Structures are given as C-alpha cells and as structure tokens.
Image (cartoon, rainbow, N blue to C red; front, side):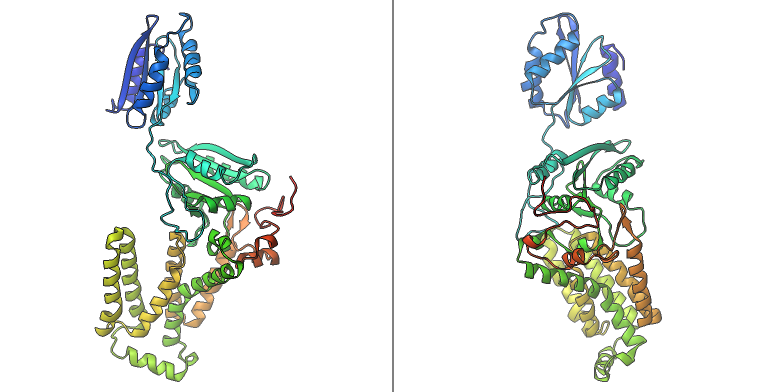
Length: 484
C-alpha cells in the first residue's frame, strides 16, 4: 500500500473501474491531508454524517503521529461500531464492499476502517417455504449476524461456538460454522472445516453452493438439511449437529444428516406424542407410496397379471379399452403433465395459483379421460402418488422422489415385479453406502440401535427422551439429568 494519499485514492478507484458509488471526502487536520472513502450503495450516509463527521470535527491535539491520535479519537467517540486498522488494498476494498468507511492520512501506508453499514436486509418474518401451524413463527434472513442472534436467543450457552471463514475468491462470502462444543464430535468439525478450506470457486451466492460442493457422493437423495427455521437448527445443535450459515442467504445447512431426519419435523415436538408418532409413520408410508405405486401398477398390468384378482383385472381392461397407448406411455404422459403444472405453480405468483390448479384439474382429470387419452385408473394412481409426494416440503427430497419414481417405473416396464425388487435392493444398498461426515446415512437402522430407532419412527414424551441420538456422537449424550 502506498503512503501518498492521492495515489491510494486513485488506485482504489481504478481497482473498481471508477464506479459511480465510490464517494471520497477530503479535509485537513493540522495542515495534513485526510480523506475518508465509502461506497454509497452499501454504506449509510446518515451514519457517516452524524457520527464520523462529528468525530473528525474534533481537533486532534497532537501534531505528531496524527494517524494514531485520529484512531484513538474515533475509537473513543464512536464506541458502538467496529474500528480496525488495515494495510492492504484487498482488505480495503473488502471492507468498503462490506459497508465500512475507510479513513486515510497522507504519509501513512495504512488506513482506519469504521463500520457504517446501511440496512439492506428485510425484517424477520414468518417462514415462507416451511409453514408452521404450531410453533415459533420467526425465520432466518439474509443478515448473518441476525441469524446468529436467532440461535443465540434460543441457546444461551457459553459452549455455543461460531467459527467464521470466507469462501469464494471474488465474493469473499462469510461462512459461519456453529456447534455446541461439549456435545459435537470434534472430528466432524475438523473434517467440515477442512472441506470448506478446500473449496476453490469464484463466488458463493447462496448456501446451496456450499451444499452442492460438500455433497461429493453421487446420490439422488439429499444428504444435507437446508432450513430457514431457527428452531430446527437449535434442535439439531442440541442433538450434536453442525450448522453452516452463509452470508446473504436465509437458508442454514444442518449436518450430519441421516435418512430419518427427512421424516421428522420440529413440529412433532409441539404436538401430543401419539399424534406426532402417527404423522411420522404416515410420512414413511407416503414416501414409499410416492415412488412405488405407479411402478407396481405397470408391473401387475403388463407382466404379473396373475397377482391381480380376475374381477379387478377385467375392470382395468375395460377402462383401458379405448386408450391407444401402452401403460408406461400413458403414465409418463400424465406424470410429465403433472410435473409441468407443478413447476408452473411453483414459479407463478400466488394470485395465479388458483387458475393453474383449475386448468390442471380439467386437463389431467375429466378432459383427458373423456378424450380417451388416459384411463381413469391411471389418473387415480398418479394422483395418489403425487399427493403422497406433497407430504414433503423440501425441494431436494421432492425431486429425489420424482427421480426414483421414474426409475422404478422403467424397471417395472422392463422386468415387472422382479425389476422393482432388484431396484429396491439397489436403492437400499445405495442408502447404506452413504456417509455424511462419517455418520452412516441409514442410522439408526444400519448400524442398528433399538433405542435410537424407536425415537426415529415414533415420538415419545419429552420426559422419556433422556438421551441424544448416539449415532452423531457418543459423548455427553444425556438430555435429562446431566450435570455440567
């Protein structure tokens, strides 16, 4: 970094192509040239005028070492902002882009940075993608400090750690790893930090970048939970998981993750144990209905007709009599039409959702059957499969259901029920082969733990859940009756 003030200012402007949001103001202290620079797009002009301007207007008493006296003056008169001294151009521009104001003194090869961020974030609102019927209504936002605060206010423990790093050569995005130090497995934390440090990419725009870069194993099913609800993250931390918060995104990643996590919800702990247990079991049933029912229909009507009662088979044949397509084509037409409508409903504004639903019902229902393109039983089969898949609001698990549904359909089309059985064995084998930070994905089923398995498929009363899941970590597992 240069010592001459004009060279410093010109170099920073050239670094950013003389962007229109760069603002520089000059003044003198004891006949020495002083300047402060900020980016109008991310800094608050009011804060600069009200606080920094008043602080700099106070005369520095000593003419010697004006820089040090100026730093002390700012540090003492503006105690509620971050004040740092930096000495590289990269650090200067990073702080400018983060909403800081940089103060330069002619003849010094360093500068003072003062936090003057503008409020560019939305307020804390109710979660949009994870609706809550009974439970906390707040959700994460794009401000990483606010997200840390939402966790802090739930877990007031000195063992709650936040470790910050930067990822992305150009974006230099803040990534914060959060965990409870005396619960988490330190090996998992070290392994995760190592993976983050190895990421070599231009920029991180959203937490899903991190999610994809960490998921190097090939699998259709997601292996990292992405959530915008602080209560979900807090529960995960208390169970020994690690949270990853990324700057400028409202979604926090939670890992390690096991298969059972996608069938449990934080709301299960806000309702009666019996009702929650019934709902959890219902989700498991819905998952397998969603991926298997269309394939089973194809198999029993194409290859394995002997397993269907004669009266039912005759009913199927009568309904299919006017349909010119094979069963697999018939189902594929309906599934593709449903997926197109689902995507349209997702992308369109809410005000247009009702009209899309009406058109979808007319096309996929009465009109398609009346035209002889689709048989009524196929409409029922696909409707049951689609509705079962709607029990999951995570887009990753929904997309995985869609993929496996089609794979099972193709297996059924080629080999019948035998193909379904073979592919199901492949499906289970693939799940059993996945590990997330050293934790088997099928835990607690494989390796089997009876106590943890019961807690994953049912919800016991709070007073009965005395330990945390042992497949994440085996130290400090007591939830009730533990001593600190």
